[in-house]
Image (cartoon, rainbow, N blue to C red; front, side):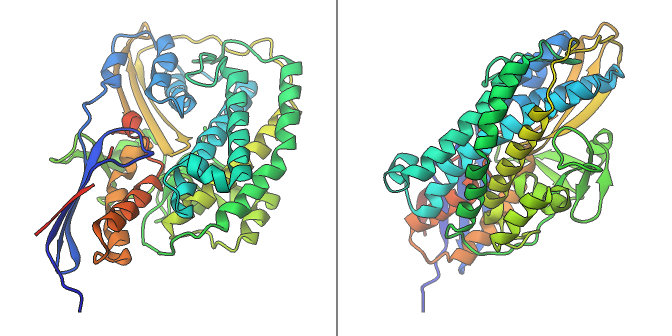
Length: 432
């Protein structure tokens, strides 16, 4: 019989995740009695930085919150401010914003799959180690990531912290020539994206089903990115204006990170939640590629998140080609914006999930108050819940290093952007 001991597990240094934090685990009689994912980085105060600023400064400031998904912060911000100002930028801007989001999904998901997740599932400590045995797969991932960056640079002027976005649209329109040249590159990469779906599904993924609530945006006829309403797997639907009536953030005593609950419970946002709720919005050829993998969706296996990311890369690439094939430059890439006092709230689908912004403006357009709820903070409680279930299922009788590796794998699976959302991780083990 395996000896059951009380242990306290503190987890020092979660590699391949940005930010600082620690995992403490108390085990009694082979069960987890208490688990705490502590984040101890200081607040970054971006919401306070925005107070007193002109609304036109907001897109460039919030882009600095994250170097991986800057456009997501810009998109949620401009949608919220345009709600305040009752501004409709029109169909050209709408298409270009969707194209920009396609680029961000492609680059972010490609980085996560190849640099963070795949090494875990293939048993490597880092992507350079993995590249020795899987050079073609790593090159494919980097090619796709670079294409995502090219899409963002086309509209944003540069791929990191883009500067082309403004309330009301874009500062300039790409030329037909540059759009056509990029479209050809994207079209040529579609076989790579389809192959990536099959490759991720063929990885030796842990098999564990969990009960959890998914939350994501829905749209009448599109896979959601910029527009739509919020929906959950429990059947709840609501508008971004009502976000605070359903999602409650609370401070936990052991962490600087806020924890969000939906109807009093943890919930999931991100690619797996999006795919679970929006399978019917995928084009038929992409849905068929998913069906060929044999992974059953909607899925309750959190490790199917890597397959969901690959499907979203394939979708975003396909959608970008569709938009660029019909591209025509606009003589008016932005519409006039007339500031007024009011409150606007909006959300969009960042690569890591629902990103909600709220702004209160003065009559001259200055920001009086701002609130931002990013996806990683929304997933904090779900990560803790997943860790409890996954580590108990894995077996707490394993040695300390094995438990540490599984805990890191579980956390990395959420693609947590700690510094930009909240903050992350350290494992040293004390056993009593």
